[in-house]
Amino acid sequence: SEQIIYFFWNISVRRNIHRICEKEAFDLIHHSTFAGDWNPSCILWNLKGQLYWGPIGGTQKVPIKAYRWLGLKGITTELFRLVITQPLRFLNRYLACKNNVKVIVANEVSKKYFTKYCNVHEAHQIVLDHVTKSHMKRDPQKAIGSGRLVSWKMWPIAIRALSKIDESDITFSLFGSGKQEKHLKHLVKTICH
Image (cartoon, rainbow, N blue to C red):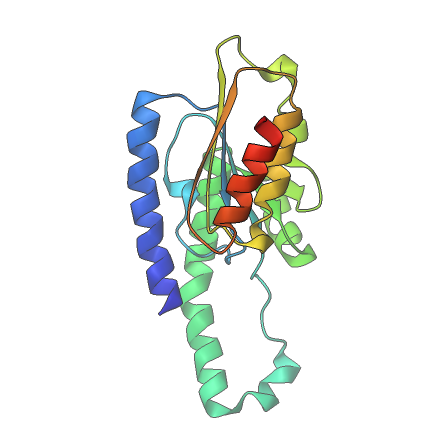
């Protein structure tokens, strides 16, 4: 049921971000997710601005030798998962490459899977290294992020990194909800004052 909720959440976020992007242009768009690479996500959004997707994990398969511990129900579930996710995984990889999405990978399997086709960054790299003054326009800079506001999404890193960019006119819009919402609002107040 969590995957179904996530699917509809993505549709809702897409609508909201498209509405916002019709009014404003963004230089950087980051969809923060630790979801598998088969979920429909930001790569379908077709937005203007550099899009980062990830960290992407979830590409590991259950090793064949481990099937003996899964039981009949577990094996059936795993095989069903593979039949459903593999075509979607291929489609998302194709769309990410086609739309010049920068993919942030969380593990070696994801890195190997995406490196052949896409512009890949490892999760421990700071994505915002690529947003330098030479890339910035003279207009006010705008960045947007979407994802659950939970600790493993690493939103404090994005907020702190953006605060260090030597630009007085930069905005960061973050869409989501979660346990870290109060902490992130406090962090922004602390950094901005």
